[in-house]
Amino acid sequence: MKKPQQVVVLGASPKPERYANQAVRELINHGHYVYPIHPRCTEIYGQKCYPHLKEIVEKIDTLTLYVGEARSSQLIKDILLMKPQRIIMNPGAENDLLETQATTNNIEVIRACTLVMLRMNLF
Image 1 (spheres, rainbow, N blue to C red):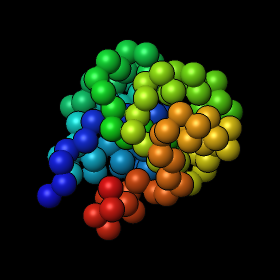
Image 2 (cartoon, rainbow, N blue to C red):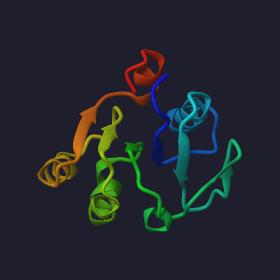
Image 3 (cartoon, one colour):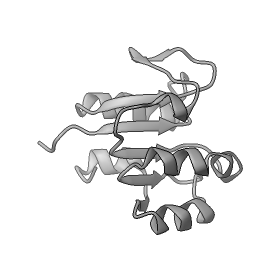
């Protein structure tokens, strides 16, 4: 088994039918440390939710993105300050500007589905 990662889920959702919610659950099931980001939710699957990226002080291995380009563009500075080792842009969450700035700052960017990566043992 691969080493557990510190993973931020940006756009986490308390709604079980949402992919962001399923990602939180599957990341936990795969043994990762999960930091859900949601402005109004306090907990998802027993994990404390954080209203803002700035509240995460741990070193983050992966930030998985579940918000659209309009929202993530407002958060580029905070994402870059967090210095994750990689960013996963899930389908519908692609952001060319974020990808360019992340790559310039030596952050790997992957356009893929976190759920598929977990299921195929590619996470």
